[in-house]
Each structure stands twice: as structure tokens, then as C-alpha cells.
Amino acid sequence: MYTMGLDIGSTASKCLVLKDGQTIVGQAAVPVGAGTSGPKRAIEKVLTEVGITIDQVVATVATGYGRHTMKQADKQVSELSCHAKGAYFLFPNISTLIDIGGQDAKALQIGPDGKILNFVMNDKCAAGTGRFLDVMARVLEVPVERMGEEGEKSTQQVEISSTCTVFAESEVISHLSKEEAICDIINGIHRSIARRVSSLVKRIKVCDEVVITGGVAQNRGVVKALEEELKVSIQSSPLAQLNGALGAALFAYDLAIKAVPEKN
Ligand code: ADP
Image (cartoon, rainbow, N blue to C red; front, side, top):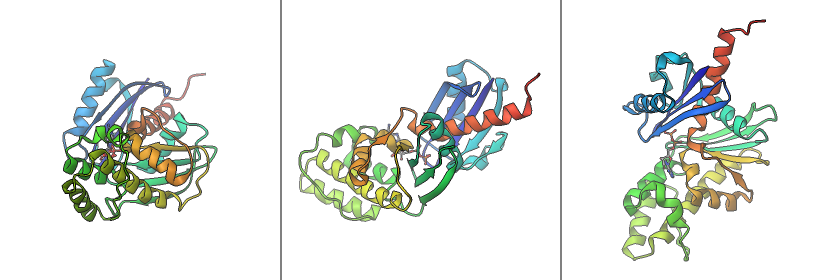
């Protein structure tokens, strides 16, 4: 039985197919989100990878900022619920979840049964989100996917003190004009985003095990800087960006087994 989860984000479209609610058989992330061809392309990519047609998918759940645009989904579920569900599936001992996406950052406190106990969110300001990194990557002419490894080469501390993305961008330009090393500037950017996210995370109770998801979780410089700020070790998975889609596919499986009761 195949079920599909679709996470239509502000910045990227993610699709994941699960077999029997257990095994991930296909996944795709397309770097354009709601209102673009991204969702359709992500679905097509996954169906081709799995070698099935959409008719073989028993149930689909959509989540993310653009979830209501996906009328053909069987259900729309909030990002918070899908992120909690996906992360609990991957990390059954999770207590704290940090999700940093393209346009928001969230921290969730998760109970031993996977339920959300508390959460905080920043969706008002680009600082502390992937957008901040995307803006800086463009100014530095470094692909956002390479920022993590570039920042690791840093040997000198460069401070980015403005929290506002626009002012921070001017600071980066000023560092560039002083011929500071790009790796040092990137490291400063990572520490800046980590300070911003950690002040959000500290508003909920931070307990072991801490897990990070969202596209930005793929940037190991940000994860390391966050570990230093929060003084905890943070778990991640290669599925970090697909976590919301995984949660959605698990909800789709719950829907599917409710619709087809097991025969005695
Ligand atoms: P949303 O759900 O809001 O669309 P995502 O969780 O998909 O956001 O994260 C998108 C962000 O992840 C981008 O803004 C970008 O900064 C970051 N990102 C995407 N891919 C990578 C990568 N390979 N390495 C590092 N950062 C990435």
C-alpha cells in the first residue's frame, strides 16, 4: 500500500512515498515552493523513481505553507503536526524539535508519545530562517548548499551583529569590501542565525534528545553553531528537509488504514 506526503513550502516542494506506512520508497525536493511548478515536479519525480502511477497511491496528505493549493490531496494537515509525526518516526526518543525552513523557524517540545506539548515559532522575520542564508549566499556568490563546508574553513572570527536581514546584508558587503575571507564571513553568518534561532528555542523547555529538521538542517555550520549556543548535541538525518513530507505520508497511511479496515 503506497501513501504520499506532500510538503509545499515557501521555498521548496517536497514529496515522499511510503510503502505500508513503514518504508520510504521515493523522495524528491524541488527548490521552488508554493505557487510554482514545484509540487507537480516533485510528485512526478517521485512517481518515476518508485515506478508507479498516481492511481496506485491510496491516500495523499498535503502540508506546508501551500497545502491548501493541493486540492487533489485527501487531507491537509498543519506543518507542526506533520513535523512532529515525521521526527517521532525517525527519532522515537525525541524531546525537542527545531525546524528551520525557508521562511520560518519553529521549536517544538514533544512528549514521549510523540504529541506536541508546546511550540514557538518565528514567521515574522527573515533573520533566523533559510531566507537569511539565501540572501547572504547570493551576495557572497556561494551556493547555499556549499555554505556549511565553506564556513568550516574559517580561522578568524568575523561578527555579523545586525539581526535585521537587510542590515546584516550591508554588513556582509562591508566585510567583503575589507577583503575579509569568505569562509570567515560565512562562519559569522552561521553564528548569527544560530543566536537568533537559539533565543527562540530557549522559550520552550530544551531536553534531550534534540533533533533538527528543515532545509537549513543540511548546513552543518548552522547546526554546529546552534549546538554551541544551546550547549546540547543535536541529531539530524539525511531526510531533514523531507521530514514534513514524511509526517504527511504517515498521516496518509493512518487515513488509508481507517478507510480499509483489516479483514478478520
Ligand atoms: P520551506 O519548507 O519553507 O520551503 P525548507 O525546509 O525546504 O523550507 O528549507 C528551505 C531552505 O533550506 C532554503 O531557504 C535554504 O536556505 C536551505 N537549503 C536548501 N537546500 C539546502 C542544502 N542542500 N544545504 C543547505 N541548506 C539548504
